[in-house]
Length: 250
Image (cartoon, rainbow, N blue to C red; front, side, top):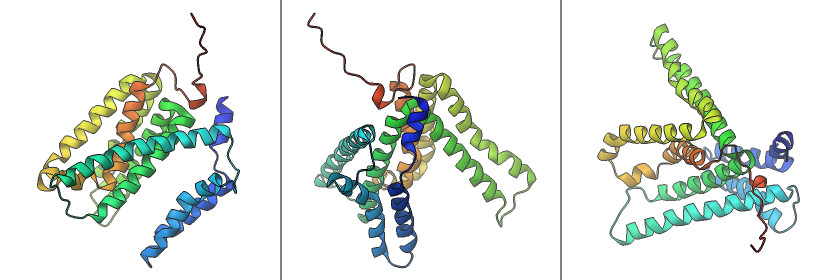
C-alpha cells in the first residue's frame, strides 16, 4: 500500500463523522443530565456493533484487521490492569473515590484502542511525530491563552512561555531521523514528569494519581510513543507491511 492510499484509508467515513458528532453532543449534554452520557456510548460502540452484526459495511479488510488488532491490545492492557486492581483490593487496598475507576477504565480502553489503531495505520515514527506535534501545538496555544487571560503577566512572559512547547517539536523532528534516540528521550521525559509529580503523589494515594484520566491522556501518548519508537525498525512499519514468511522445510 502506498503512502497516498494509507492516507485515504484514514479519512473518516460518513459513519465516523456522525458517530463523532453524537459523542461530542453526549459530552456537552451531560451538563443537562448525565443520562445523556449514553450518547457517548452509542457513538463510540454503536458503529462497531452494527459492523459485527453485518448491518454496516464501510471498512475494507485492512481497516477491519487494524480494528481487531487494536481491540485485542485493549483487551490485554485493560485486562492486565483489572487483575492488578483486583489483587490490590482483595489484599485490603482502598480508593477514596471508587467511581473514578470506571472513568479510568473507559479512558484506558479508549486510549489503548485508538493509539493501537494509529500505529497500525501510520507506523511508529509517523504516529510519534504527529502526536508530538499535536502536543506541541496544544501546549503552545495553552501558554498563549493563559498569558492573555485576566492575570496578565507581561510581554516577556508571553514571549518566553510558548518556548516550553519547543521540546515537543524538537522531539518530533528527532523521531523522524533517529527513532530510537527519540524513544529514549521520550521515556526519560516521562520519568522526569513523574519525578516532578512525586510531591503530589506523596500527599495523595498513588492509585488516585494513576486512575486520573489526565494521567492517561497526557503520559500515555508520550510513554507509548517512546516504547513504539524503541521497538520500531529502521523504517516505520505499518500493519500491512508485516508478511508471513513461508516455510521452506530446510
